[in-house]
Image (tube, rainbow, N blue to C red; front, side, top):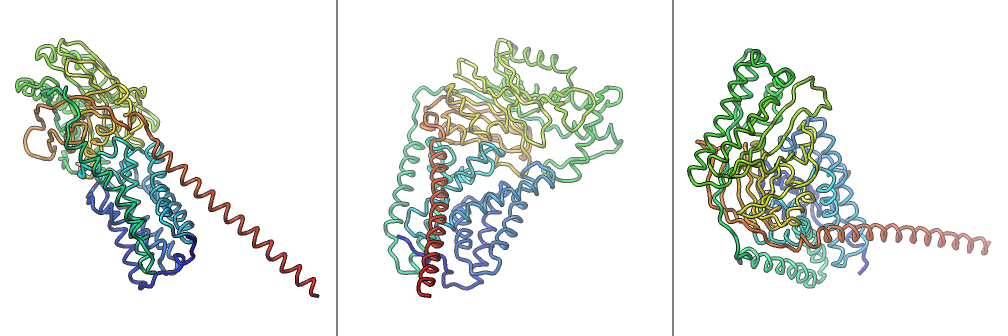
Length: 552
């Protein structure tokens, strides 16, 4: 049904519109990885949508842009490891994409009020998220990640990926606003409520069945251990050797803090000329770090672990140390009859310039016979923050008595398209050494849960600076360990390992592509109608002019 009624402000006060904008902005801030209040995902978008459609405020779009730009900066600060100017640019880009989504929705709903118009807003947001995930930094900003604890809903990602969850959240927002609009005019809403409720209930029934009913009978329970040794002492020692000053690093230090940037700067002369005579404290700290990694790994093996995984880049090493450290790992694995995934950060010496990739961020997978099975290089170094050469894009798979094992590293799991190889290879166990910081913990670990659900495998994410987490193909937590707790940073657990086929592995990103087609068709329809109305108006004006001339 066509109507222009929605183009006028609803009969509420100006103060209410201001409150809806500020409340929506606050809800969005609370969805930042620094805080993560999951229920806000179901609140914020609806408040912002109501404001954008109906606010009777002067300069309402300007107010929207100002408030949401501030929101973007607050939400991303300390989360994205970018310099402030880069963060400002990315926030402006994000705001422009958001503005486009709300504008497209407004262009449709000010002319039409049928329930089908509620699909425009979620389809547009899913299109944006899919673009971001594919080309602009990965899954970080998908609102679906905030629902990691809503296990029944999370199962939908085994069919649609993250986008199906995002669609339901944003569709809830547009449906609620649609109901408010129609109820204010005493118009029926039962059909719309029934459609959304029916879809949501169907998703819940699927999620309940998948989460509560185990789908595999051939899972193997494997004793697995995670090991992390904090590397702060290495950084403190390098700083002392370079500056002659003592420093104590707070484990919860902000990644954006000037203090940490100053400490990190001390790395440069050490990396360029790693001389043992010049940097005695640094080399002693690195040797102590290596010894600690093997000591904790020995404890894990003695406790029965058959697979041991270190956290990302935990074994810091110069190029000269590389081969000897790997040989030590081979001897350890053979002596203790374990699979050992060494996570190493090996750097090359030489002059560092802005474009230099001086770091090798890799894993070395060694079998219980001491043979080197695989060397994997991180496929997706963090943009603007990591000076390492990317890998070849392949996620390897290694056949073991415990199933097919695939290693990958941290940010790689934020790129769902790359992780689809897990399903293609029928991987049973993803070993994911990772490195986080306080502002993004434990959120970043929870994000990885969805890769296991999408691809039907067990995930073991061993993290420094965050939450080490093991989950099964349903996202059900099997073991976890908090880096910020007291004591040694290690855990042992018997983990069920196995692979389950998923719909998402078969159909891929059909759902987001369908949303993109729907949005493009909607935009084309709007443009076509506008052009037709313009031509019709011109024709009417010409006819009126001709009639006047004829009368004269």
